[in-house]
Image 1 (cartoon, rainbow, N blue to C red):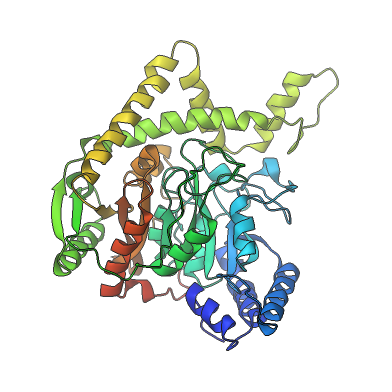
Image 2: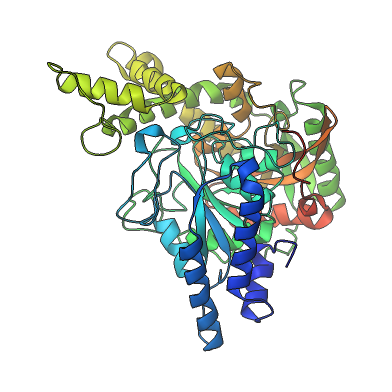
Length: 493
């Protein structure tokens, strides 16, 4: 093999014994060895473990047993999702040597389905960032241009799939951290509805916002991956007891009388021209497929960033209080005469990076006496209004489409100002605030400084309507070839 196989091709080829799981895994490991020194997608890989698991898959197939719906698929795991093998660092010095005694529910479900966990991918520290620059172990690079970011915080997972280092990966999303890097890397990324996938084993950032979701090279592959990892979990009280549909069953069937909403706030003059052009082309595609396209007004779009950065930082301040240098993680050395307060302060000062400290301080401030009602309580009220606004939109249409990110991938170091970085998630954040589902799919390219960079189209549907979301996305994918394009690695740098 020379070209990497996608998820569905891998499953079919391994099941029919045209290629062995060991061969597929070996090819992924060779590609990681050849390219990851430059890209820095992976923090660590598990070559011996994954080859042993591949051999087991081959033995099951040879004996006529069912190896599972993802048999032979090498899958990477974002480094804030715990595994009972290897380390889980969350991209932080604080957890540089942390080893979890258990695996996340999503990881266990992947393994039970025959997937092969090949390694952990780099991410912004504690998933706080939009570029994967805020990682204690170095910045991941975009395979389309090595001088540019892959997006974040799940940039390592997105870049690994886009570069063909593995056909699938898991990421997590609190405000756009799956969809935005998927757009910037030219791959498919899914943010499930809140509660669709268990958060057990996901290191918490914003507990009312976080979700685990898949990356892959096409819509059908992400639908299969989500089907495997979704479902109720007794270990996560926020997971929904709703039955998980077979997303692939009707994914190729067009939706009759399809109504597509286009929020007018999403086609801003502040977007890169290629981003707006990609959305306009998408409108033409859906119109050509018989869809009715409606203009939707979502005036609260502009309030999403402020609302999110109050709620998310408040929850982060609470969740990260457990990292105190006492129970696990980095423990600072104390001088004679120093006490417990000094241990807390020094361990956290040494262990956390600048962006994490910034968000903890902001979250602590908005929760403090005298400011709780002015900031946090008001943000919760706006959150409810945002959800009501989106609910009203979905009463008129099956899905909303628009840009995933305002611009293509930006240069490493370009957005030194935190606010300019936060604005990268302008079009993704409200889906997390409202708990709805969303997907980013490749939708075109932009020419920037002589480089060809991918542009993503975002499709959003009401909560727990991933089946419609996948069908709408598949309609577009079947009518275009953007998802078939791959980066020629080695440019830039």
